[in-house]
Amino acid sequence: MNDYGFFKVAAAVPVLKVANPDFNKEEIKKCITLAAAEGAGLVVFPELSLTGYTCADLFFQEELISASQKALIDILKHTMAFDTAVVVGMPVRCGYKLYNCAVVLNKGKIMGVVPKAYLANFDGLSEKRWFTSGVDVLDCEVDICGYTVPFGKLLFGLGNDAVAGIEIGQDACAAITPGSIMAVSGANLILNPSAVADVVGKNDYNERLLSVNSAASVCGYVHSGAGVTESTTDLVFAGEALVYENGALLARGKRFSRRSELTFACVDVQRLNRYRAVNSSFSDNSLQFSDDYKLIDCKVSRFSPVDFDRFVDPTPFVPSDPSLREKRCEEIFNIQTAGLAKRLEHTGLKKLVIGISGGLDSTLALLVAAKTMELLGLPMLNIIGITMPGFGTTGRTYNNALELISSIGASMREISISDAVLGHFRDIGHNPEVRDVTYENAQARERTQILMDVANAEGAILVGTGDLSEAAMGWCTYNGDHMSMYGVNAGIPKTLVKYLVSYVSTQCDAHTSGVLKDILDTPVSPELLPPDENGKIVQKTEDRIGPYELHDFFLYYFVRTGASKEKILFLASKAFEGKYDRNTIDHWLTLFIKRFFASQFKRTCTPDAPKIGSVGLSPRGDWKMPTDADCAAWLD
View (spheres, rainbow, N blue to C red):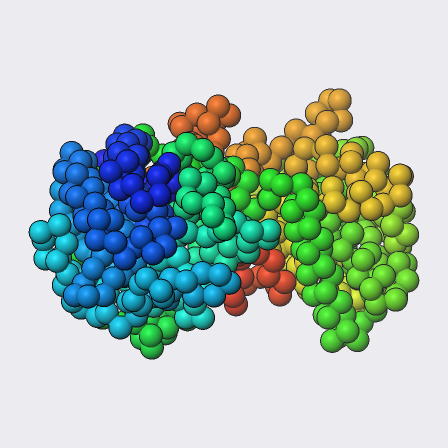
C-alpha cells in the first residue's frame, strides 16, 4: 500500500469533570476508539486531561493522584486493541516532586513520560505552586502504574518517517521552545497538549504563534487545548484544536463545544522532510542546537489512502479567498513593476517595447509597463506596443490588441509578418502549405527579430511576455518568444495570470476594463495556424498540451514538493475529483514530465526576470537541472 508520505493525526478535546479521572477516562477511551476508526496514527489530548487542568490545590491530594493512575491503567488496557499512539495529560510524581506531564501510550504499553518545561506562573496562573519544572529532567526513568518507564527528553518514532516531540502548554511560548530543539533533533511532528484560557484576542494570538512555530521548525504541529468543561472559577477554556504544517493551517476544531470533539488532519511528513533537506539553515541549526533525545519506537498502523481527508487545493498558486487573492495580486503586480523600474533606472533607458497579441500574457506585460511608467513619471507614449499580425491572427485578438494599446495611451505600431515569413520560407526552401514546427517557429522568430530591432532603434528595453507555465512546458519558440531583455511574467503561472489581469481590470476605466474582460474570455492560443472559415481560433493551446490548471498543479507539486508521479496523480485525483478522471490526469501528467525534462535547454538560457513566488525556474535561482537529464525514473 502506498501511503504517499502522509501521517494522520487527531487533536481530541473530550468532555471532562474536574478532579474526576474515572469519568474522564471513559471520554478519553471513546475518543481513542473514534480516532482509530478514522485511521489516525496518533491522538493528542489536552494538558492534564485525565484530571482536569483547573484542580488547583487538589493536586496535593493523594486521592487525585491515585485515582488518575488507576484511570490510566484502564486507558492503557483500552489501547491494546488499537495501532494508535495516544498522548494523555496527567500529573506524575517522581520522588517527592510532582510534574505536569504528557504520557504516551501505545498497544497497552506506557512508552514514555514527558514533563512540562516552562510552568505558567503569571497573569493569575500559579502552576509552580503545584508542579516542578521538567527543564532539568534529562534521560531518567519514573515509576508509574507499576511500570518503570523513560522520563524526560524523549522523541517518539511513529513509522512512515514520522517522529514526534512533545511540548506542553506554555512551553510553546518560550523564547526558545522545547519544540524547536526537538525539531532540529529529528522531530517532524510537535505535539502541544495545552490548557489556554480564552480571553479576548488570545485565540488569534495563539493561532499566529503556533503557525509561526510550525513554520520556523518546518514541522507538523498538533495543538489540543482544554475545553469548556474545565472549572470556570476564574477562567473559561474554549477547547481549541489546531493542526499546522510548515505554517499552513490544515485543520481547526470547533471551539466552545459542550461535547467531545475530534479534529483530524493528514500531515505530509515526506514533504516536510524534503523542505528540511533543501533548507540549509535548518541543517545548520541542527548542527548547532540539536540535543540528545532518546528515541522510542511505537507500533502505529500505516496510513491508508482511504482515510485521506485533507483538502487538496486544485489551484495551489491562486488563493481561494477573494480578499487574500486580491492582496496577492497587488503584491505580485508591485514586484513586477519594481523589477522593471529598476532595470530602466539601471540602464538609463526611458522606453519599453512590447509585442501585443491580444492574449493574456502580453496584456499583463503591457499593464505592468504602464504602471512602471506611472511609477517613474515617464509618459505612456514611451511604451511602444507593436502588433504583428500573421497567418493565424484572428479579428478578435487583433482588435483587442489595438484597443488595449490605444486605451493605455501607448505608442502603437502595426507590422505584418506575413510577407517577411513567406520570403524566409523561399530562402530556406520551405513549403508554406506544410504547417509544421518550422511553419510555426518562423513566425515567432520573425516577431522577436522585429521587437529586438525596434528596441535597438528606439533605445528601449524589450519586455518579455512568456509566463512560468510556458517555461515549464517548453511552450515557447527557442530564440523566439523565449527571448527578451527582461521577462516580467516569467515567475507567474498561467492560472494566476488571468487573475492578475482581472485584478487590474477592476481599477481601470470602463472602456479599458471591457477590453480586458474580452481578453480574459479569449481561448489561449499562439495563433500560428490560420483561423477556421468563420475567423475563429483553431490552434487552442490547451487542446494540444492539456489544461493549464492541471499543468500548474503538476508544476507546483513536482518542483515545490519533489513529489513522485504516483503521489502527484493521487493528489490531483483528489483535487480535481468530478472534473477529470484518473486516466485523463495520468495522460497529461505523463506529458508534463516528458515536456518538462525535454525543455530544460530553453530554461537554461532565459533572460532576467523577477522571482514572484515559491516556485521559480530561473537557472540563476531556484531551479538548477542538467539539460540532458532523463525522465525515465519519473515515469516508472
